[in-house]
Length: 166
Ligand code: ZN
Image (cartoon, rainbow, N blue to C red; front, side):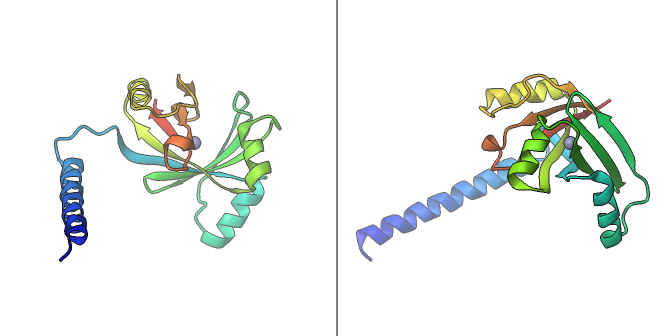
């Protein structure tokens, strides 16, 4: 075996060792966790009622719907509760709202995933210290409690919302 391939194998073995170490580290039972649950999945739509009817026709999952307007966020949302998670359909009511720009640029689609946390201020501080790009430095009052967004640039291209229940 030449020296180069020997080195490659050693490097590979080292990275496997590293992967194993990392996996063990991540599954340690006593480890403190920031996120235990996905609160909801947000989908940007042009019209929440049209989207509700469409989804219900396809999936027959709408048994209970809550519609709320968040004037400060410039949106109207329909919340569909499923077992232990909610689907949130978001429609802009203000052309200047982020969601309106999102629709204009990318059309309807997956907008964000919301992680439930116990202490949103603490989580935001911790994420900031770890270099995550925070869209909201301070949490704002959402439908379920406090909310804040983390920029997709620091979360593998997915807009992440933190949510703390009231
Ligand atoms: Zn949300």
